[in-house]
Length: 187
Image 1 (cartoon, rainbow, N blue to C red):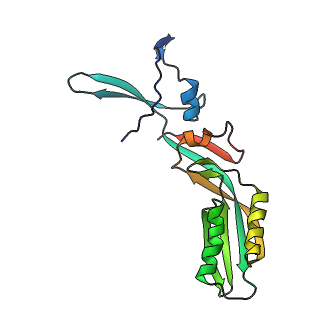
Image 2 (image 1 turned 120 degrees about the horizontal axis):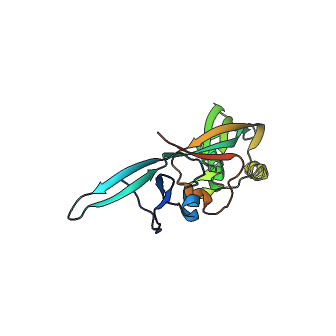
Image 3 (image 1 turned 180 degrees about the vertical axis):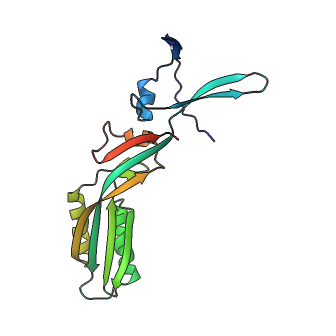
């Protein structure tokens, strides 16, 4: 089922050579993160009833976001003590507090866990700006709770998002971070 935006623009059909053209206003260009040269499909639509109504659907395809996200792998213990499920909930609660929702926790042994944390700048609310300094602050908060960060490795994880509306990405910022690329995939 299609959802229609609240914003409607009036336009005029004009001639360009042997074709007819309709311009896309800047507001819709920004809302859908469209770019010049982008391929689209035009589909005629008709609604029949008491009156015949018609239109042209401009189909962009499926919106994809590619992100080179920071991946942190950490080995964490609690001063030789056994880590309880409550300890792990406390630790993951810190991640949740900072909107770090992409993590995997595996038990190495009774007193040690391995955490794989993907630090994504994408959320359903828009772009999050989480820096390496923010990660250092989070790790210090973990240590203040009595955990010991024994080992830490940094890497990059390629993330592909399909469920984020492009208007959310541009709602609060005029420019996407350099680690984020977007495109419409036309099938």
